[in-house]
Image 1 (tube, rainbow, N blue to C red):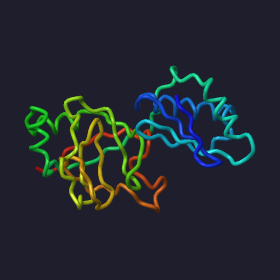
Image 2: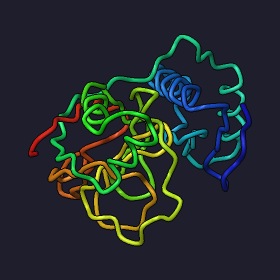
Image 3: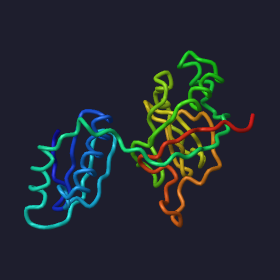
Length: 208
């Protein structure tokens, strides 16, 4: 674990892998709820880091850092959130490429994607863009060699160990296997993101 100050009211914690990120984030929230890390006001996980936003004040970051160094994370699993179903039409422009790379048929790619219970590990890149883990290892995919300048809103893709859906049109290099009509980000909704960290997701095949 490596601790790096970010300004005068935040700490960035670097760890080895995503599993360590999720365990650490769960341990921090549990300790904060018990009063041990009361100065931590926000916990923001990413692929290999956890950002802690803290209350400003003299000695706060040093105190939080000392507490973190003694924090036990082994007994903490990633937190489970609500479960949602996301309907997907599997007609993405990269579906056949994913089938070729994986050595599977397109229908088997879809079956593996819909059979898994995915979990939102963290969000980033765009508001409401969740990075979901928990899929079959055969769906681990390289990003496209040439990213697209425009990926339509609702596109569902694969990249590395993650799957995700684009909340709005943007550039992107994920392998696109389908599309959803779900509203993934709505500022008027609470929470605004349909796929918030911890949410468990089942993809449901619709259409042809």
